[in-house]
Image (cartoon, rainbow, N blue to C red; front, side):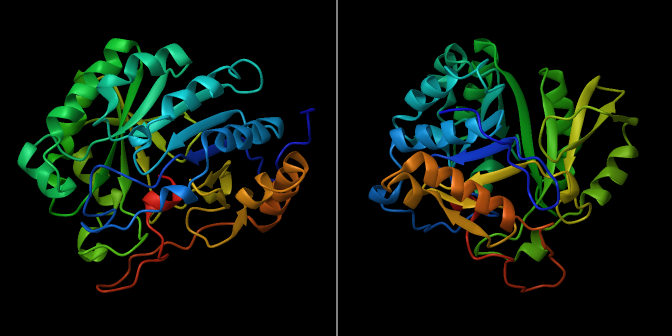
Length: 334
């Protein structure tokens, strides 16, 4: 492929960050993410390793410099590490960073391979350090495996950032202790507001905890000061004087961050969603499987730039409200 023009949307935002889902499957069933009896895609509908690789190369050719591999849980896909190795060969040659988001249940067996392939940091989802609470939230008693995965990642040389979804009356009281534990282990932690994606068995209004409220509570215990660090995503950071660590806030509901959006998401079936909170999509699988895949993929990316919306319209404003979108986060790519 020859170098092509960068991806710039109609609002003059340059897209340099791809979140690429390799599977919608997950080995946990977190209550805020999906129902216990979640239906996953037939494997035949998921893009092959070669198609995922070719698609990623097309994005890099158009100026994407950061790729985050997601799911579902990306490490449940058996050939996942082969894709990481293939993409890792582009580091320093168009690609500046290759990373992934994981629940860490499978991480202990893959951490060393990830590092060797060029990954230098990972995001790990962890909402509680209480084993019973974890089992209730994830519907699986997997906290020991997660902690083993975190330890293995750090041992392999990977920088770890924890992602914690703030849940009212569930882990709200535990957030200060999570901050202290993460920082004590040399890890950043980012808090995230629950997002209204897909039907779950509870009511997200009952789960929703505004991070503005969390921050006020944290300021009763810690000294927080603004930190200009940017990781390429929507988080905004503060330093915590008492712990010496960094704390992030992702606020899709209380603090819209869409003006600076630099990313798109592609599902494991090759559907590009121009916005996590929108229905605008482009079928990249059809482009990849056509007679001239490179040209068709580039044209599809041009279309994605034309339809990317100015912002999402997430809200959780009343009990019993339907989710903003029917699709689950695991289907879109977390």
